[in-house]
Structure formats: C-alpha cells, structure tokens
Image (cartoon, rainbow, N blue to C red; front, side, top):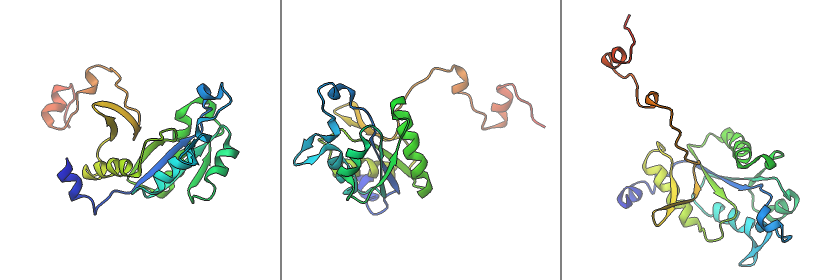
Amino acid sequence: MADRLDDVSDQVASVAILVLAAGKSSRTSQDGVHKLLSSFGGETLVRRSVRVAVESRGRSVTVVTGSRCEEIDRSISDTGVRVVRNIAYEHGIGTSISAGVAKIEEDRPEGVLVLLADMPLLESTALDSLILAFSSEQGACIVRATAGLLPGNPSGVPIVDVEIGDGAQVDVDTVQAIISAGGTIG
C-alpha cells in the first residue's frame, strides 16, 4: 500500500474534514468539565483538533457544534473554519454528521473524513494518511483508521453489518443472472 500512497501524493482526492464537536461531554461534565474545553499543550482540545485538521491535506474543514457552542465557537473563532450549529445534538452523533455533511455537500468533495474532536494524540500526518489511502483507491472505499489491528477513529463512516439474507448477494449483471434470479427477458 505504501507504493500506492506514494503514487497518489500529487493527486490527492478532494476530501472535506468534518470535525464533530457538538456532544455534551456527559462523562466528564459530571465533574463540571467539558472535555473539548480542556487544555492540551496550551490550547483547548477542540482548537487542537481543528488545527490538526487545518494543517492536513483536507480541502476544507467544517466543525459541528452543539452543547456549549458559544464557548467552543470562541475557542476556534480565528481558525478560518466553517462552523455549523446542530440544534438537535442531544439526539446523537448521527444528527451532527447529517448537519455537517449537508453543509459540506455544497462544496461537492470526493469524500468526507469524520474527525471526532476529542482525540488529542492525532496529528495532521495521520489525517493525511487516511486521505492518501482514500485517494489511492480513487475514492471507491470507506477508509477506517486502525491502531495495531483494532479499528479506531477517525473514520469515514461507522461500518455496520446488517444481515438481510440472500438478497444481499444476488445481483443481475448478465442475462443468465436475470433468468437465474427469476426474471424474464423481453
């Protein structure tokens, strides 16, 4: 894969980065702390995450805010990123993805990289690796980060397997396949 990544380094796909920063931080807020407003290396975690995204090969950066949006917006106000307010953030991460992608789609990127704003160990080179992997596949895939062999974040989208039976494996690309599946010609 490294050779393929080297081949695409000058042909990077247009990937928008969607930073999710809308959650309530419910586990840390019990102690009066919002994790995205905690400090890492002298900057808030949300600002650090946005900076990492801005420094990457991503085409654009959109941040979705919700809970404590005024404080989070202030923390990133001078970064030049687009901010989308998710008023339905209490209904889960899916509402933030939906709100962000709706805004990003106006730019028509080839892909979207979803970045959770609470990942203090990420660097822009990690995001670049994901973008380059997506580019090497001409955008015909879902790219998911791993640590060792364990899936991690950020990811393009959650991957969920849903058993739906034989219908998931039958397609009709040929006349024979149409007939075999019970169809008729003409």
